Length: 54
Image (cartoon, rainbow, N blue to C red):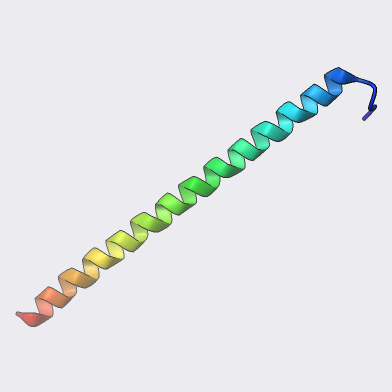
């Protein structure tokens, strides 16, 4: 990439910015899924424990 071409620099900045946004969005989605899985597991463990007491 030529360092004297401002259009190329701007395009590179846009591409990098969009990639970072996409990666952050994917990480947030993974964390949400992980949190949901933990909540489901916790609810099931509670259900199973309550059933074993009966």
